[in-house]
Length: 240
Ligand SMILES: Nc1ncnc2c1ncn2[C@@H]1O[C@H](COP(=O)(O)OP(=O)(O)O)[C@@H](O)[C@H]1O
Ligand SMILES: [Mg+2]
Image (tube, rainbow, N blue to C red; front, side):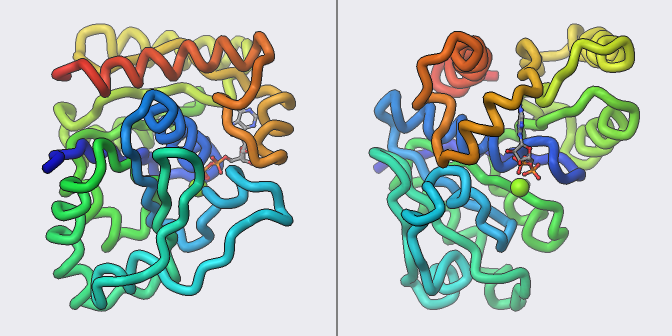
């Protein structure tokens, strides 16, 4: 029986890369041979848009809600070692919320890692965060995001924050300033703070083609692979 680690990728703001980073991390773990499950609290299920070409996107009729309340549902195989349970909609019954924690505990017996792509739909988010071992926070280097990060640290407690990963980084004066600020704050903590992931049209193109960073050989993408590998290594071996 496994006792998988559950990681939630969370920040209280859209468009920073929660879905993208969740998928990259999960696929990275799967490529290394770990049985990995992606979950989401976003009923748009964008994970499927970024892992399949439009015409190959799998269909589903039920997902997490059905699994939790009825014990069955769709589970989509995205890649080797990588599964995904979609979310049907954002209406959550008390019965569902009550049963969710036990369902997540049971899932940990089947998977080495569960990576959860979140949106702050408060009720569900709370359960996901409670069940998670650690949180990874994607960040954008501007004032409101830095404030958002401080909020998450406040809400979840600093010990639960595993890594903060700057995404869509551009080498501007403002972003450099906020990167430096973050780095100074995080230097005195156990939180992993890898190199920023640049904002690149090449990356949006890759995502649009339904490919992850582990499916590209370009040098720029390899730099991002290295950054992600820092996090993967600690997830696999670290006690942080
Ligand atoms: N490093 C990057 N460079 C360029 N585009 C990116 C990068 N990271 C994410 N994107 C794009 O930004 C958009 C938002 O990313 P997404 O992961 O959906 O954010 P969230 O889940 O936080 O709302 C998507 O269209 C995605 O393709
Ligand atoms: Mg998203």
